[in-house]
Length: 328
Image (cartoon, rainbow, N blue to C red; front, top):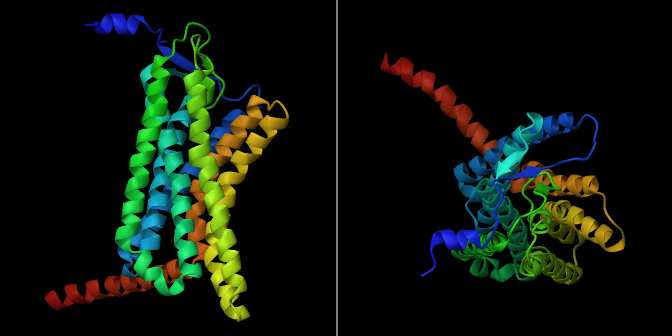
């Protein structure tokens, strides 16, 4: 039997990591104050979308199960990232304990994974709706979508738990300064003074499965949608079908373009840490803020449901005084 003390002795864990953030950026505190504003809008917007979907019976469909899950992922992902790190940099408390760092890494990456997979689930919904309209309600049922979302959650939790667990087999006997604005996987495993090849390989596998594969499948789905739209003879119907995809396409572009731009820049040149950090921040904070606005402004179903809910609330507010008068 190996004792816990001997197991712990085989690895060197630092008491804390130092999150460096930006390098010599003037007025950086104003940037973190802006992040607080982004978080406030994210909370209000996603809570509004979740409340609307919950209250409006017309939105109790398979598609809006996925939209609701995207709102949950956006809200939880931003909550795992912005408040802690805005507080850290605004008040210069940039040291974080080893265990808290791993917990933070788990939640940030889990919800980022769910965002990517939910965009794929929404692409599945759109491709069936346009390519197989007569079979849509038979294929994309609420049960089917709930099962897809459930599998996504299990997969996200398992792969990120493995990603984080592999960090615990690393020893940190040199620098503990993390060149990022949060407990990022890559900058942390590169600090290890023992073999980190498994972590590097796992990072590549994660990027491939969670970023590249979903994007390729989404691209393929839109190729299929493009061929289906070409078969539609009436221009009005074609434009109507295309409009149902615009919200999703905007979400996909906002989420994946910053990620791929940094991958491309890393491939052709050395990227300054500040550039990488700004790109990561844009990817992880701006889409969760804008997603509710896009679905509210671009989706007729949601706008109509909001109007119905508003009228219902207005009628209820008018009925309450009447009821109180009648009771008296």
